[in-house]
View 1 (spheres, each protein chain N blue to C red):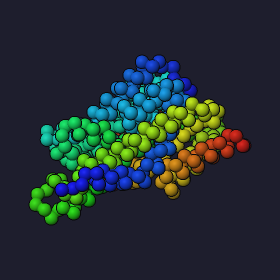
View 2: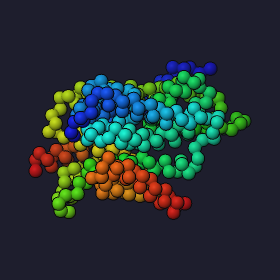
View 3: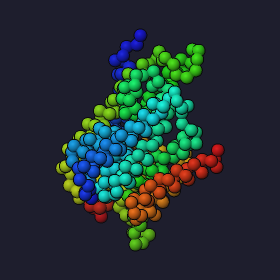
View 4: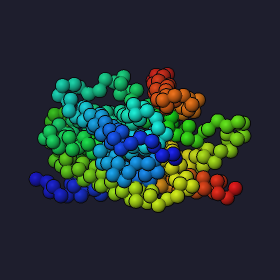
Length: 113
Length: 242
């Protein structure tokens, strides 16, 4: 990972603004109860897909880096380690096991091969 | 009357098995923050002020890549939007709390604390359903506030401790180990547990594909575009099934 060029002021601003907005999200309906009946059903339906969509959008570019050829793209250590970690995540549903399997595979490919 | 510390302890006990999952996640959040160039105080501050792991890791990742601050904030907030669902769902159970306790409980609201609390509260409701009236009323089975504070407080404490440990460890881990690869692995682990049905799988597939195609777009628009496309695809797939 590269290092950020932002100074302390910018970083603290991000911390505080994200923290405040996250609190507003968490507190929203707890605060509003009595004025509103809860969330509009259509909005609630859409929000159910936010975690899967955002997490996939965060993960995929870290694992799939379209290279000069299909083979180069498929043999990227990150993708191979990600596939192993994905299988472990699916079978164990355990974050620690997933992390361990992914990191060990990643190190094995980059350092040993 | 109920014994208050008992319910607090019951909450902590309910959270205990989940703490094993919180620990590596918090460690990664600490290590990644330091590797991205945040100071120890900023890294710990992020965990205390925001207290939402996935959004913290996304913010760290984007800061390290020098994304614009608006994109950093927007992405973190979009990731946390799901918590409005938890807020709406749990609000009736917090209704009898004083304002300041409502705020404390809201601050502590996470995926895990929500899941633990709602399971317990609805179970208590079913047991008490022979009573007259509908909706959550006074619950004789559990003091909700103490139970919630026990479970959510335990998660909070372990998260902060794990972040701190990660900050300390992170300073000593050589860059060449590529420890920051743990960040996408954490996301992957969370993603896999989200893939509980076909519409969610469609949302992930479309979201991930658009993000890969758009990885070179300015302002990290690939990420936001992927997220948006994924949500739209998920809703569309859901509509076809229903």
